[in-house]
Image 1 (cartoon, rainbow, N blue to C red):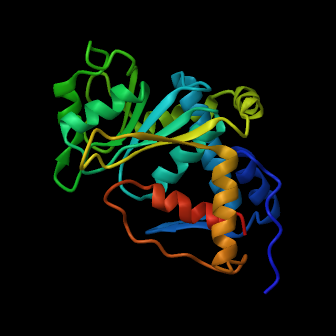
Image 2: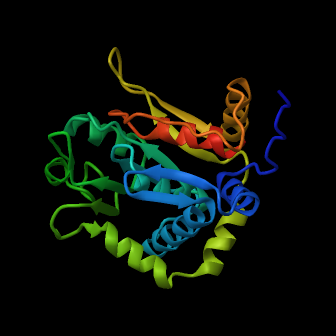
Length: 247
């Protein structure tokens, strides 16, 4: 089988642009009722990036993400990367103590979360911890998908609305400032035998690694990759998408 040419891009935002240019009508994501082409996926990512920028997310900021595998996970993922911020996926099994530790240790300034998942009440945990308090002094924004409106919580729909009129030029400038060596993700170990450790992954390394994985699996443009739901974090979904995107 002929090997695929590796992508030219070395940042995740540029990679999405490249794939949308090469395969605008090719399906990028299929999840329940969502069927997004690369062009549609890029449009949604950029709108969400504009919303996050209006919220105050900037290059180098740490944005924690707490939800199971779903389309919004992937949209937030690339929107954060496009702005040059760092995504910090949080295990959906986290206790209040574990959630507080990751948010504090990562210096997270923003948390995007669902209200609850598999019996875990994340907003209840956050209320007990206290965003912006001495325990989490850097956490300025909490964006929530689902649940009732609460003081101090930005509904995900409001973030989406912010993106409708946010600055396209500001997002372009932010994307152009991202370097291949910038940290795209901080992944925390499970902490089963010790305190969780944060593993830093660069944009360039992610793209190169996922391309090589796709090569070993002999992936091509016509292939589709099914991925079951991960209870820990949606990063497995991101890995799968990158492997397919680069082919």
